Image (cartoon, rainbow, N blue to C red; front, side):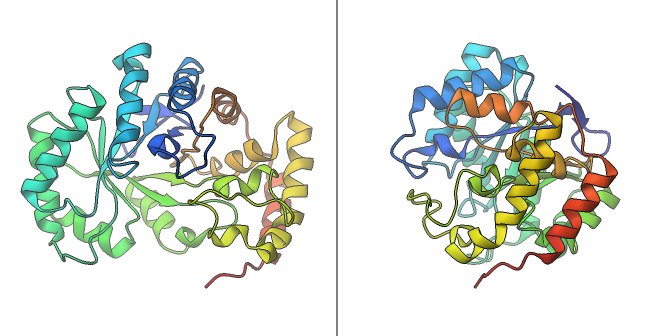
Length: 312
């Protein structure tokens, strides 16, 4: 496994992480099993993946509890634990209580990366209050690094201005070959400022694996209404899937692994694909340790510029 720094001067984490959203319950389909999700994490760690991401929002803490069993089995020292405080827990006291609850569910004494899941659009909790609470947890040794998720540059700038003794290590955002909105502002800002990008949905919830097409769409709650799975968008993505399959074949890789390698062309981008069974964890892990050539990147880039998705 290849390792990279989480932000400027940060700890080393695997170049490909593991997302545990799938372990939050049945939202990802009736075939999700706690035991298989746990085994997927254990297999990922066995193959060198140490960055494992979850959130209190995933199944109301259920994903964290599944992770705790895997952590006990593989050993705490082998897991870089990342979790998130929900957008409804951003008052100072709530941040403290939410962190304590996550620590208990995870069965750990400290969280390696504690992230604000999303900015608060409803209760209008000042970012200053939230960030000061996170910094207090950092000083107390309950969290080792502070991160955010789904933050625009304006949010990042304000959040960082309220930290006096630490900085934001990472921003977790949606980023894949078909959904590249972060390339306009967030990616350049984070690259310049030494903030890691954790890319969630890095294979487009499965679209970029080539598993789905116009006549085959997922029916689980998470993806049933996802824009990427509209028939028009699946047809628009088909040429890209064909090129990913062709390019990957030259390296002995799958389309999904090739899509992850495309993200890894930027060293500050760390994809965190999910896995609900060990075989998927194995495929994700094998997306690290190789790279696309400049010619292959140009070919994919030309193709991406021609794709037009139907979105609302």
